[in-house]
Amino acid sequence: MVEAEDLQSLKMIALLGGCKGPIWLSSQSLGSELGISPQTASRRLIALERQQFIVRSMKPDGQYVAVTREGEGQLKQEYADYIRIFNPKRRQYFLAGAVISGLGEGRYYMSIPHYKEQFSKYLGFEPFPGTLNIRLDPASIRIRQDLEHIGWIEISGFTADERTFGGVKTLPCRVRGHDCAIVEPSRTHYPEDIIEVIAGCGLRKALDLNDNDMIEVEITYD
Amino acid sequence: MVEAEDLQSLKMIALLGGCKGPIWLSSQSLGSELGISPQTASRRLIALERQQFIVRSMKPDGQYVAVTREGEGQLKQEYADYIRIFNPKRRQYFLAGAVISGLGEGRYYMSIPHYKEQFSKYLGFEPFPGTLNIRLDPASIRIRQDLEHIGWIEISGFTADERTFGGVKTLPCRVRGHDCAIVEPSRTHYPEDIIEVIAGCGLRKALDLNDNDMIEVEITYD
DNA sequence: ATTACTAAAAGACGAGTAA
DNA sequence: TTTACTCGTCTTTTAGTAA
Image (cartoon, rainbow over all chains, first blue to last red; front, side, top):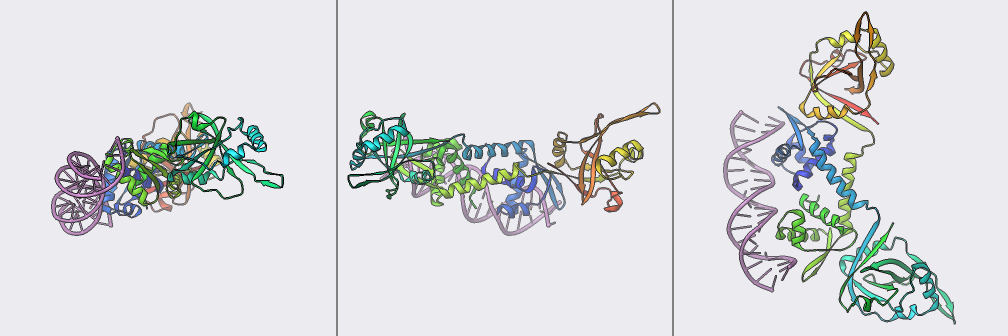
């Protein structure tokens, strides 16, 4: 495995055109590009040459430096890693958090036929009357925020008996192999560290969950 | 500017899924991925957290780690650098070498009407009767090899007076602002550290070149 | 099992120097 | 000007330890 500093130097040489042909360098010029002393830059060049990542041609007042095939291979591997990070085939996110006791609101809404029918229609399962509430781990909060911008399913509200039932949005997900969905009111603000998950069965019982158990929620879309 | 080691660790966390959600890590597991000790891995995590490139959520037996927006920004910048290295708009290569005295062969061939006409037709200039010979710097030899695989213009040979004149291939290039072309026999093997360049005028005189002067040759294509 | 500290060992850094 | 050495210093690493 190539040293992190060597990789940094090699990348800089490539950025300066070292893959397209020999570039004119001095230890000082490379050093100032990298924010290191000429001595250290010189040592980096020696190290890269010894690993055959560059070839050098010394002149009295500097040197020609070019990236070799091996050097370019290293850089391409690195490039491939970044492609893997940023261009996954299908987008997939994870949330982690602890099971908490809800306020029973979910159960109430899930008992209302209008919502029940809509969820069945869009999610492919008839929601169990009750939600699993999860307090997100701090590390998950940013992901939760990112999820706001993807394709939630909107379920409209309605008015009945002079009472207004608000719209709800839902996002299919998986929890330990079960098809589930995150649900959330469309309009009203919701605590950003809590999610409510519904499923076709009672998750608490099916997964033998107790308060404070850690659990992961997987969201996939394309 | 982010430290090279920190970047390495951050990239590994991203590869493990840290941009898609919190991942379960221990200093030991990260250390073994990176080939460093758990102590160092722990310190790296602390450093990344202090720079706000990751958020952590400690548990008794490990930790959840997720890449923050700033951390992802750093990685994207790195990604952009690699894109710049490998996806330039138009391909461009450089060769560097020293002017040497040729054997006068070029002058002979360039005086033959058949070649002269063909070069004029394909290159857009009437070649000066003479070639500039360049001994490539060792750092350029790999680029020269890469150039074998791109689009050279083939100029056919011919037979006259019971003598066979071989085919020649040529590649347009620029030398200090002058439109030129590298020429080389199509069939016979040619020393890989020497190139012959033709132009519409006598380059030696026009550029005031003497033997051993260093010169760069620019090849651009799309 | 963890994390993260302290302290000794190893290694990297840059000033100075020679070619 | 270069490159690349030596050398003293400082940083980083890892082993050991405690929580």
